[in-house]
Length: 144
Length: 409
Image 1: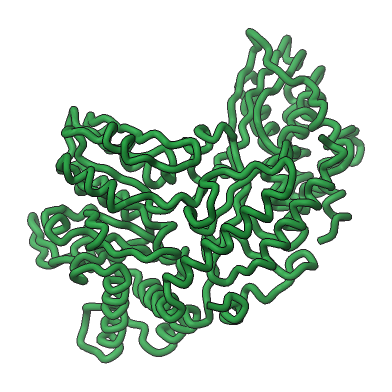
Image 2: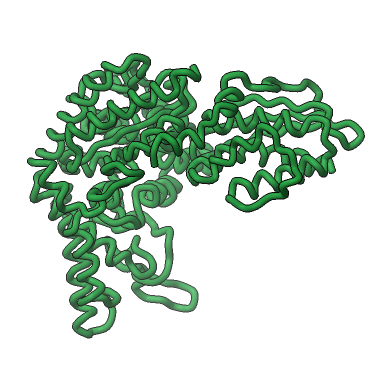
């Protein structure tokens, strides 16, 4: 593996989300709160989501972790805002497929999230990327 | 000793990882295995495999001799008085759990104290947490000095006449600190407590003499000392073990079984339920032969040298924070660090791309991480096959990591 491969992992847009995380913080009195950690490495996320009439109106995250886990959380919160619960959950499935290197529907516009595709080639880092998505899934399942 | 020569016995080290010659700096997690150990296990399965202590056939006798022979090698390795004091178990975690469950539940009660330190591995924390919850005893922590060492004054201030068990790691898997076990044991005994030693990181690297230490229990794992996974040892003073109840019933440990009452074998077998870990024990025996041939003192000196070299080389890298004792003489071959704001995972990924294997995470020591005020760290750990060139590669890899993330931070 060369640094070229590393560049596949650490894409510029990922580093941008890591450096300037979107939706960092916590929603007071949000409808959903999920705390999750990755016991093998100590990464942790505190996710708060607001749902009104079945639509995610706001999502914020707080936590500690590596560039992959934190940028993924930033992208995830960005992506689910304004989406219906089912749409957000579908996105979580698509993301999970992407991490497994599986095909996913091409008609979906994933935006920044697409940059995380390279993580699939680094098995040890997949759990970093999926932490916030798992938290979101858990939270929104409860709201359904 | 000549690490470069010794490297030849480890076939796994002779490979490229991600286009670079492998530099394995994760021996504190598990060590690599020399040909001598791989072959001993393979020979056993090719020529002598049978269940032990059963039947009269030749293979059974051969397997029993090899298994019990390995026990005697372990006895000599830690200078125990008798093989009755050497119990083969799955590893350090199982051994510490056995002490907590068997000795602990019988001898610790409400109002009693169990004393450990902040630097312990989870395996030497949770069994005592559980015991404290079960019995109503109090779990107390000996504080730590700024440099990651333990002062005997603090031990004296924490251990009281209510203390029934003191359990301390001999060498820290994160800081490399070598703890003064003999002195701590003395203090524990003065208060009538038993001394338990987690020697998982000590047995591979420094000489252990249980009679000199005078500890009551001592646990270690085979896989960190060139042996296979799945085998570990609990040493216990015969008189204590004799009075303890087994916690696993059936198989090897059985003496006589009635419909409603049964009796156990004598030591050490009464604690070895099921079919024993025969190949594992034989592999551990071969590992001990291998270590003895090099000399454990020579290994210890080699690691102090590598630790000193690593401390001086890595200190040159700006933004690198190193945790633990400042002198390589005061620590085993472990150097834990963080590189500026780059997360340890990211450090480990870039190093891996350079063929360098280090550990990143909390190292199964979350209370210690809290004490260090970090959520995780990167760790390079050395063993008898590592050289100064390996550390040079690590230093170069860290500089590249810094450069790689320089425009991010």
